Image (cartoon, rainbow, N blue to C red; front, side, top):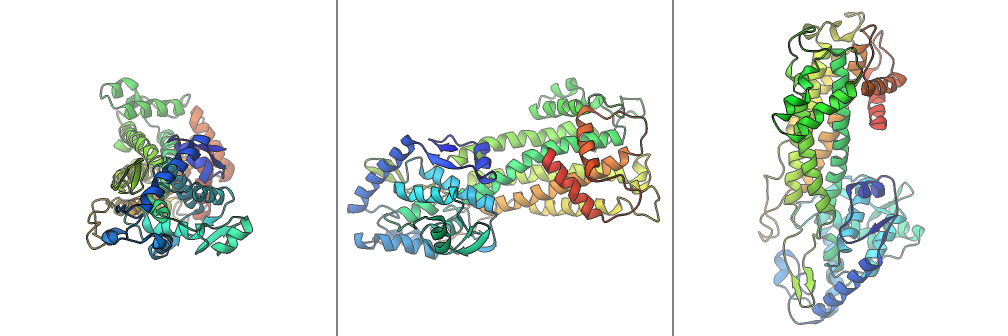
Length: 492
């Protein structure tokens, strides 16, 4: 059970809920904070002073005052008019992330939402009533309006939802789960859709997988080093300490740890003086990516716990409009991550090329025992090159673009949702490239004789060989590539 408390949600908590379906509850202090902020909000709603989204319209319509007897209609109209998403539905784990993060933000006690509304959303999460949320349509400011509106449709018994693996009308899903839909009251619709939870959910999942991809990359690189009789002298910690980058030092130590005990790797001048950059500069490249990931993790965990509402209930007589819904802090991070993870695939593909190109090694061409009749690993390298090239296109930053909306009231937006979705695609492409490198490295290693693998590489090699054999002849390669991909996802 994950307990929602004041800004304490970690990335690991997030993953436990979204992927492992762990249940969530509110602490007693959290309930009290929500109740208190609602009391403040209700007093403001009854007053004569204009409070954005409470007794006014939205966006450019913020100058239009709404009467007390129309406040419920105002909130429902907001949801149905803003549910304008298009494209494929978000993944179930991402939808669960949206729901969890929205509850977590509202639980901070600055949004003025009713406790029963938050608890209903939480009940949906725990009973696995998942709104169908189209993944496209958000500008990333005023947050993820369209995706979050689709989430709220299910909360009010509208739209579509997934329950027990089936897509059905939300009202039917809520009935089957024994949950009563909510009738939104003053400010609640706005409290539910002003925020960065959709882009943060997509990006946080991608980031979590990117961390795993770096761990995988360290192992695939080590396998390739063994296959190519790589030089470990370049990984001497002292070389990296004098430059001073933390990630570089950590990666040099990690590669040597993985390779400990290997009789395939060499020292400087045993066979050659130095290796190509894709081998020799693994600490510099993987290390820079590690530093990027550590920087990004800090920012993402801030956003997991952020109050991204508008307006915000600060005190008994202060309900202020601001811009915490703006996705720029995450948009920049996800664009930065996209570049970093793309480089992980880029250097992996170059190592793959050194494995299959007979002009760059002492192995059979394309790792085929009978080249000519069989093509061996010729085309897996094509696939890796295609994925790397696609990543380069996807790495163009989304955050540098902005199209004004709401009659120029919202004249600068983050495009953070686009940045998150691009990052997700780049991470998946990169994991595929790494699987191809590992597949080829194991094939190359099997051309060597009388060796001992490193302590870390031996584990991965054994797992891969348990799924795919040495290829004596051509087979349906994508099936074997998929098996290696699944092995790496399970072991690392």
